[in-house]
Every structure is written in structure tokens, then in C-alpha cells.
Amino acid sequence: MFNIFKKNKKELSQDIDLSILNTDIHSHFIPGIDDGSKSMEESIFLLKQMEELGYKKVITTPHVYYDSFLEGIEVLDKKIEELKVNAKFNGIKLQIEVGGEYLLDDDISDRIKNKQIKTFSDNFILIEFPMTNQPMGYEKWLFDLQLAGYNIILAHPERFLYFYEDKKQYLSLKDRGIYFQMNIGSISGYYGNKVKEVAEYLIKENMIDLVGSDCHGQRHIDAIKRTLRSPILKQLIESGKLINNKF
Ligand SMILES: [Fe+2]
Image (cartoon, rainbow, N blue to C red; front, side, top):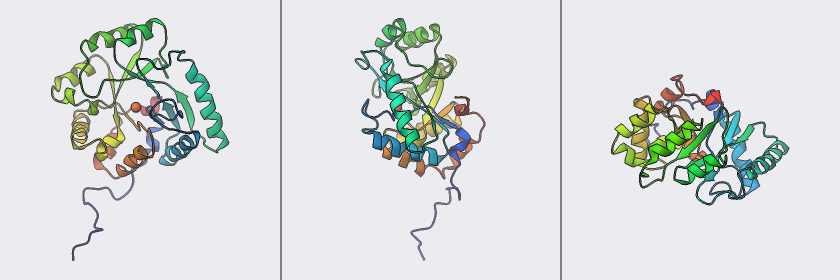
């Protein structure tokens, strides 16, 4: 008899243990500062689930572009302290730090000059490209960042489909020493089948250095939970190639 509850044979029989990662380096947990968490209550609810997933540390990375934080990136120090105090009060033991997710555009040169870049760990910066169009001349901005001593992590390369159309660009970015951070939810199909396909391609090509939650809200935690029986995620996490636990 046809059993609608029959498990997909390709799935693992047990959830993957994410605690091996130790650290998530991409999320939007500071309330009301970008398109991530909207309230302190929501942030606490999400952080609790990150802890339950096995994480010991989160480096949260508010979006930074154009006119964000014109008052100075130092405002993030105050915001992260508020989040830490509230997390502790609510029994959360996660270590919490702050960085930023920088949209790569010509604004980045001024931010380098004015030292308005929030780094984490050993001068690491998380960057993203525009979703729809490849920015002209992005190589120079990457070069300027590296010349200024920043170690660059590219957020979710699998979501920039224009690179997939011209795959040698992925290689070129890797040749420049850029680290690739894949969103775990990409494997679940949350961002669409094409993004899932690109994520699997990058994993197979050994290009992924880090995985991230890119958690803006409950929908992203749910997407992560849907990948916990994915053989390809297990293969990636157990490959020994990921550097999440160095942060
Ligand atoms: Fe993000």
C-alpha cells in the first residue's frame, strides 16, 4: 500500500549535529536595525533556537550599505551590548559578537578611508554583491579591501546566479583568496531550485569555506531545520574543510 509518510530514501535517518560548527558568522539578530529581527523578543526567540541547534557562538552581521550607520559604525557596539544583556537575562549562553554584512559598491572606498568597517576575529569582513547584477569594477574594491588588510568572506555566493552563468568568476574570486560562506538554507531549496543547484555545485567543487544561517527570522531557522537530514550537508560539515570553528 502506498504510504504517504514513507521517508525519502535519500534522507539521513538522524539529524546532523551542527555543534561541530561551533560558530555562525552570518545573521541579523540585532532588533530593528535592518531587515532582520524586529524586536528584542524575536531576537531572544531566534537566539534560543540557534543554541538548541548546537551553536556556541554567533557573530551577527547587520546589513551595511549606502546610507546605513552614517552616525558611525560605533553605534553597533551599543546595540550588541543591549542584545547580550537581554540574552543573558533570558538564560542564553551563546557568545554573541557583532560584525557587518557589507554591500560591495563604491561606498566601500570611503568606509575603508574612514575606518568605518566593523570586522570580526582577525580583521575579517563579510561582504555581499547585489542580487541581480554583477557590479562593474568590483575587482578594484576587493583589491582595496585586501590592500587595507581585510580578510574577505563572501556571503552566499550561491545566490549570485550571474556568477554561475560564468563559473570561472567563482574560480577567480577563490584565486583572490576570498572565503565563500554558503547559507545552510540554500540546500533546502528555500531560495529556489537554481540556488540549491548552485550550492550543490560549489560544495562538489570544494569551494565552500564556511556555512551560515543568514537568519533574519523564523523562516530561516525553519529552512535550516529542513536541511538537517541532507546527505550533502552532512558530507560538507564532516569534510573537515569548513572553518566556522576558527571564529
Ligand atoms: Fe545576510
